[in-house]
Amino acid sequence: SFGRPLDRFNVRARFKVACRVLGPDRVADLSIHSGRHSAVSHLLAAGRTLAEVRDAAGHSSIATTSIYSHVVADDGKVGEIFRETA
Image 1 (cartoon, rainbow, N blue to C red):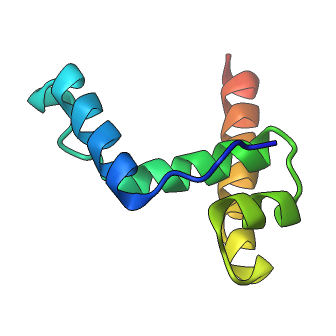
Image 2: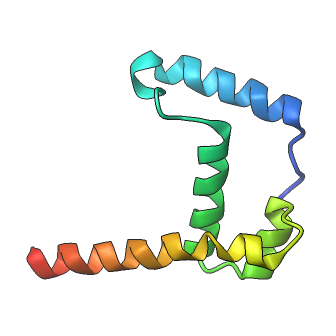
């Protein structure tokens, strides 16, 4: 189970707290969207199915969720390159 969904007010409040804790130098490139993108990518990388992640993310179409699967594939390729050159 992924737990209960956060509403937009809770997400914004938690994001603001995280930004305050990290400080301005570390949050220049952060956004709620980038956090959502990371969460979906990590769920797929952890082996969750596209259907599970679609439901957790609230996507209406599995095609939307599958867009994130390229990130997981790309991460694997990067890892292979690092291992080969080490």
